[in-house]
Image (cartoon, rainbow, N blue to C red; front, side, top):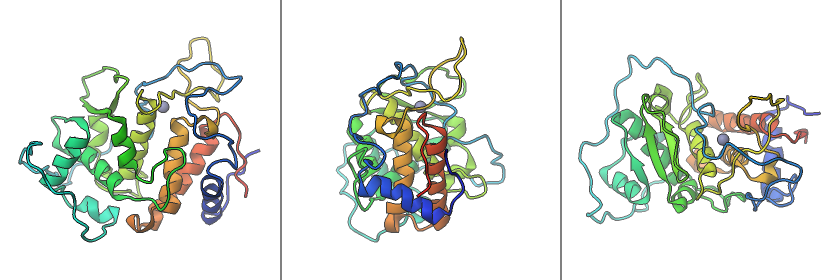
Length: 296
Ligand SMILES: [Zn+2]
């Protein structure tokens, strides 16, 4: 039923067509009401669960890498930093090579309630993900999120971002995103996309968006379907019925599709764009109970 192997260019064109020309209506007829459950599907369970298995990478050896330090100054909200002037347009890879300026951190902290980690490396990765989200201006709105800027969407939710220490096993609150220190600290998160490991800030952002969709301000859209037979003791749903449901997997598919085809000058690395396209296809095939034919 589902075709899997096809050229990247063709798949980009196909997925881009879904989202752009039709505003997702090529496959779905109503992509803007994510709270509406699909008919015939049972209720949802997972809600704001931790999603530990989704997208964030594996533990990797980070020995031999130089530590990255956050600026040691502790900016307070009291200064009134001027917004970023319209200086040079940076791409996301070069952005991540520079440590964030104190003024940038002040602005981000004004926009987000972030509970920092004791680990400066982990905190820096979160700030870098937010910086990248802010920088990338897509060339059109993402229909599902109704914005062309991911930072703006996340900011509008007024959610908290908390970095969880390994010993902490608490669940996130319904207005909170939980990120895991040990995963943030992985060395590949110093890059936009680590080709060898298939990880990086690009994928971390997908994970942040995914979790944000599960929060109450983000739509409170839990997974509502399971592709695998659910045993008597099986836990929560892990898949969504379809794109139209507008759940966390649809948010990820939208995100990756837009990185692949609408990130313009902000993502210059074609390898990461191709990887984003591949990721969108992989999610389409694996994370929806509806079987999509991806053959153009
Ligand atoms: Zn989820």
